[in-house]
Length: 434
Picture 1 (cartoon, rainbow, N blue to C red):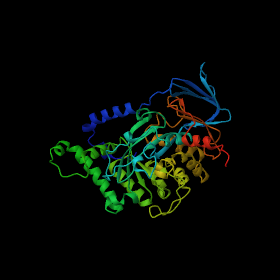
Picture 2: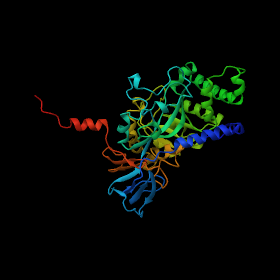
Picture 3: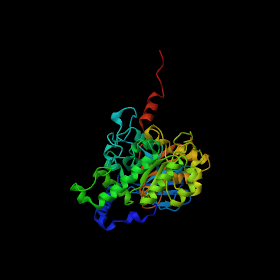
Picture 4: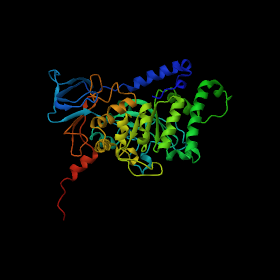
């Protein structure tokens, strides 16, 4: 979080609203217990992430939570045993930026729920109720070991509010972890139209929105009586931005080239915002500054094609950022961030091949995103008291040849089925040609 006295101004005025909002958010964020079963995953090579790996260890799950991890865990009578000898056991992977449940077929508008068309300022827009729990892309993603995702809006200067969900449940309420989890914005090439065709215009407009949100907060009654000058956005959007100004939720900003990254850092510093960067293809150029400020960066390690938006991408961007001490989160980009969300572990493996430490890569798809989005007390590592999102692998999860052996979400074992796998089985044996 970037320090600033400005974020604390007006705290007394906001305390009642903030407390109520926090209680509501906490209630929403409590995962539903979907299984009272006791499960022991035994004999595997366990990677807690929060500590060193453990050989021939056990992960004990009860009532949807992890209750013990270690080499001398007592297994209760009647527990279901998952034999993992020769296997690797990790937390469920977290994909730090997707549009899962929001975009099904990119070219079909009826299956796209990720944006508000009428405005490039949509801070009040929360994607939660647009998520489709029956999306066919959800099982496709989770059978590759991804159990939790940020599902985010897109478009404009401020796209709206993203949510964190687990990839299991018949309703949004069953899937929900946190809503909102972040406010999504952009200061890259895609946001230039919001600033009159200029990056400087986009940054200036963002500052105007933040200033007007503070002005609105200070003079709500006058605003309602029509006694204030016209503000930069409707009241609902300004209200939503107050949660960002109070550092209750992070501002997740798309910024690719160095100058855009630096613009985002200036805005965040000036207003005391909790900042997360997305894209940051030229982040390696300012790695020390990002590390100094503790700004998490969500990157696609496969991004290596120069563009006017990012003239100098590098395949070792993840390694350079991680080596400097920047909290790195790995995402899988492309196809509206939905169809390829399952490739997050491929991205992690790619980052390792270009110099990122293996342990750091595992953190980048588990504990780092959990920390950045404020859920590390319940997600991101294998520790007692945490939600039992666990994956058993045939070997190193970052190797192409590795298969997922078992997936648990909130303590429930998930069938390793998807439409793609069903089609494979259906057409594996073809009838003779005539």
